[in-house]
Amino acid sequence: MIAAGHELTAQAGVEILNAGGNAFDAILASLAASCVCEPILSSFAGGGFLLASPVGGESSVYDFFVKTPRRPQQGKPFDFKDVDVYYGAVTQKFHIGKASVGVPGIVLGMFEIHRDLGSIPMKDILAPAMDYARKGIRTNAYQAFLFQVVRDILATDETCANLFSSPAASDRLLQEGETMTLPEMADFMEVLTIEGPDIFYRGEIAQMIAREMEEGGLITRTDLENYDVVRRKPLTVDYHGAKIEMNAPPSAGGLLIAFGLNLLEKINIAQYAHNAEDYLLALAQVMDMTQKARLEKESLGCLKSCFLHPDFVEIYRRELAGRPAVSRGTTHISAIDADRNMASMTVSIGEGSGCVIPGTATQMNNMLGEKDLNPAGFHNWEPGERLCSMMTPTMIKWPDGSQVATGTGGANRIRTAMLQQIVKLVDYKLSIEESVTSPRIHLEDGQLDIEGGFDGRFTELLTRYPDHNRWEGPSMFFGGIHAVGFDGRGINGCGDPRRDGHAQKT
Image (tube, rainbow, N blue to C red):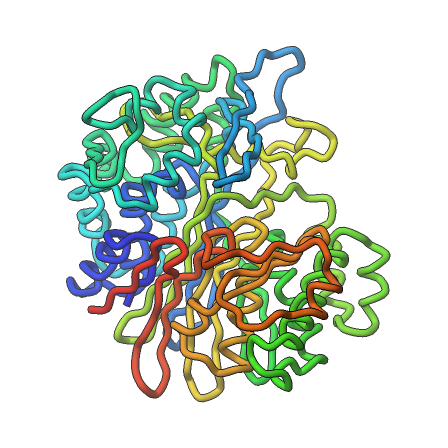
C-alpha cells in the first residue's frame, strides 16, 4: 500500500509493488512521480529524508537533504530577490533566485537507497514517472491552487513560467483540468537510468548547473562533486508501550516531537476524552513548552531534570543549537509491501527558486533563501553544512508487531501534526484513517489555531490563549499526513484529504 499527496504519485508505487518490487522500490517510484505530479512541492533538485524499516532488520535514516555551497565571494553580485507567496488571505515574502539554491540531494539519495534496499532495476522504478511526464498530467484542483500560491515565483524566469503556463493561454498558469506535459523531464529520467547519479553530480548536468550558477548563483562543480548521502540511526523514543522512530539530529523535527512525548508521558493524556477541552489544553501546553524549550536555553535547562534524560539533552544542544533551520513546502510518501518492509519519506524544494536546470524541466530549490537560515544575515553559513529540517518521517511500532509508517508536510506544523497523530494512535487507539482525518490544533508564538471539526465552546482554552483563530473547516495549514500500516486486521492506510492525499492498495 502507498499513501501520498497525489493519486498518480501513489499509483506509481502500486505499479512497482504489483511488478514484484519491494516497499523501497515503490517509494522511489512514487518519489519520481511526485516530481512530475506535485512539482511545487517535490523536485529532483530538492532534498529529503527516508526512514527505512526492513523486515527483520534495523531501521535507518537516509539524509539526502540540501547542503550549503562554498562561502560566497565578497562583492559578487547575487541573483537573490524577494517575492510574495499567497497563502489564501495571508501573503508572505520569501527569497528566490540562483543565490537561494542549495546543493540538491534527491538524485543521489534515490540511487544510494536503491543500491542498499532496492530489488528491481532503476529503469523499471522510474518507468511510471517517465510515462506520466510524456503523456501529460491533468491538473487537479489542489495543484492549480498551489500554482496560484507561488505564482510570483514561477513568473520570475521565462523558462520556469513556460513550464507552468496554460496550453490555452501562455499568459496564465495551468488551470484545473488542463494537461501539463514534461517531455524534457522524461528524457532526463531516462538518462539517469543509463548514466546513474554521476551525470547529475559530475557529468553533463552538473556542468549545466554550474554554468547556470556562474551569473548570480553560488553552486560550483566542486559543491556537486562533494555532495554525500548520510545514513543515521533514527531517534527512538519509548512512549506508552510503543516505540517511536523519527528523523535524527541535526534535523529538528524528531527532537521536538520527542521532547513533547516526554512531557506527555508524565501527563497521561488518555485520562481525558479524545477531542475534549482538557485534551486540547494538555496538547496546547505541551506545544507551548516545546517551543520555549527550543528557543530558550533557560527553559531547556529547567525542563532537563524533570522530563529529559541528560544524554538526550546533550544531543539536542550539540546537534541542534546554532544550526540553520529550514522548513517550508513539503510532501510525504509512506509505503508498505506484503513482506512488511516499510518506508516513510518526506521531501521538499522550499517554495522553489524560479530557476530551472536547462533541458530537464526541473525547478531548483530555494533553501538558502529561508529567513530562519540566516540569523546573522543571508549568505553567512559555513560551506558544506547539512541543513537542519523540521521534516520527520516516522515509524510507530507496538510489541504485538503492529506498525505504522507516517509523516507530513507543513513547515512548523509538522511537529504538532505528528505529535497529535502519535497520541491518537497510541493513547486513543484510533485507526490510521481516524488519526489522519480528525481535527488538529497548532500553537506557535502564543497564537492558537483550532481546525474546524471540534465540538464545544472551549471557554477555558480560548481564555488561556486569547490570541486564537478558529478555522471553519479542515485546512492544508494543519499539514498533510500520509500513513500506511498493518495490524491483526491487515494492511491499511490513509492519504490526508487536507492536501489531496490518496492511499492505494495492491
